[in-house]
Length: 304
Length: 298
Image 1 (tube, rainbow over the protein chains, first blue to last red):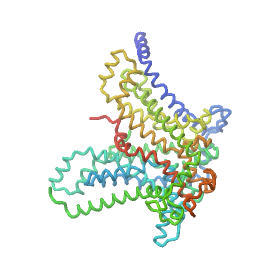
Image 2 (cartoon, rainbow over the protein chains, first blue to last red; image 1 turned 135 degrees about the vertical axis):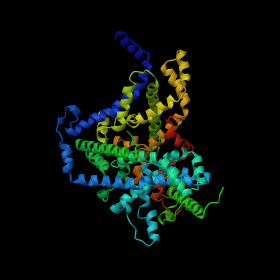
Image 3 (tube, chains in turn yellow, brown; image 1 turned 90 degrees about the horizontal axis):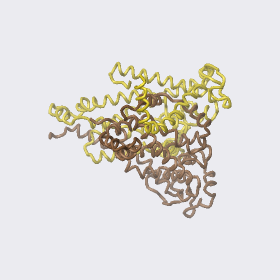
Image 4 (cartoon, rainbow over the protein chains, first blue to last red; image 1 turned 90 degrees about the vertical axis):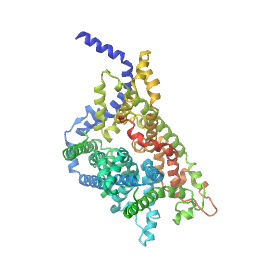
């Protein structure tokens, strides 16, 4: 026992530089990732900065209950869920379809050019995308020129609730569809080309080849990404929302993330918004877990 | 090679049309912004600017360069991007390397410690309160340090390091080199591809981020460019912009034409996007690598 202890200590001394190397990253994680987890405790307390997190008074589930009694709670939950589901419905299949179309292009140079162009919006910042949307949807903007061309009356797109989701989701596709194809194209590049030759000999047309060779090879990737996407349904991109929304569109645009930002950071209701955040993380985790479980049962593909 | 059926050729034609449409949808808005930023006020307000400048002038750019916040924003963004990317690469490499050493006591614990952060976090408000209580608000550090380590990156680095043939470092150890020397003299020089990819993604991600600045910075002198841009696009009105750039002194360009505030806003977009546009051609061949750089080969 003693010798093995000595050997262990000798090994730790021999590896002293390794511990030194790990230290900066370890401390960064401890401070910036683990301390905030501890900070979640304020959801159960009346937070008093001078008393600190631990010293503040326990109040149990007070702030969780006040969320259920908050008249805004239903609205933000509904908006978060609907925006998430619509985004999933429109934005998830888009890169798969585009990757399949890329794959069918015969001219390799043309393919490369379109790909390069379609990836670019992914690298444009949210602020710029939101700013572009604001300019193009303005009274004298591009969209209203098109409306006017067809003889319509100018529309203030960003001030009308009816348009918010469409603008949010379509611009999201504009930003992400090209870059989203990369992972599918990588899966496609792994297909053995002789499979296509054999299928051709067997008389398969292009459509048949897509259905029986291309699509099956995309399926595992698709399922994994679908699990992530369903798990992330409640985590809408509120950075873009807080740039684009306004009191006129809160009715459809205000989601959990933006509500927490407004009430928490701007309104200083720290305990309450921490409780909301914690509640949502819990729901999100359950959704992810269930999706993964269903996927394992149905398709035998799963994350964990 | 048998001849393609009519349907197949029709599909090819349709596919090419779709692709051209996609290119138009992606490029038109960007070209329109470039063109608007370079156009004269009367053409902009009549809505006749498409993808080519009309009434070409550089007034919008000379105007915004009079705004000291643009320069400060540029400088701040460069500091934040370089700082956060540099620290990210250094900390990540140093954390990943020990995870490749057989017999390193604590490997299991560290892996678990990292994994937890992939699934759980404190959320927006507790993180904000932490920064506040550490007195990090309005400092450079809040923009540089918190993102330095992501478990995902550490695991990718580790897999990459594991793919480096171990004979190279073994012989260095036999020659008496310590772990630090092996990491910095043997492993890192062999990981240039990994570093290039993560450096580019890190720089672009940091350059484009703005939300951290929104919640952690109050002092406008510390704003990164994205926040300056956000103010131009969403909060400042025309008079405020003119106030910042020195009033009417530069508001007139071609005879009888005043500068359209829209051109000013578009020029700030272009100025903000410019570095990304410059590195994009070099960057784009790294995309696939970035996704798969850590994957185990065959």
